[in-house]
Length: 136
Image (cartoon, rainbow, N blue to C red; front, side, top):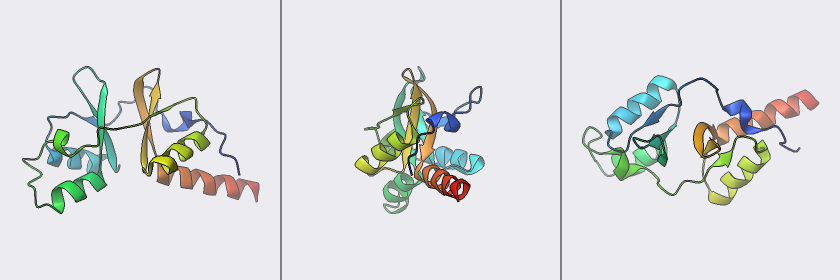
């Protein structure tokens, strides 16, 4: 089943992207994730440029497991900084390919260099299931 629908469905125009700053504490980031029901945040610098991504997996593996205090650990110490993005006009299939190639579960969506959304592996699976159900 081809995933040809564009990533636009995961961009909420006019809504503020949930993000965190590199100097924020990990505890702040975890609260923001919890309040918004999401499992990752883009990390934006003061000029709104993406400098990384912080996921629940980062928090567990780099804070919880190592016994770091999330009220003292900075996002910049825990985030993944080697982040790939996908343009919002790309088909969902391209996002799935990038995520599989890189072994990642979250992919920021960009529009002419600006981060405008995020797609997760859970989103792609849900889309595949709904597409299969529509075809049945």
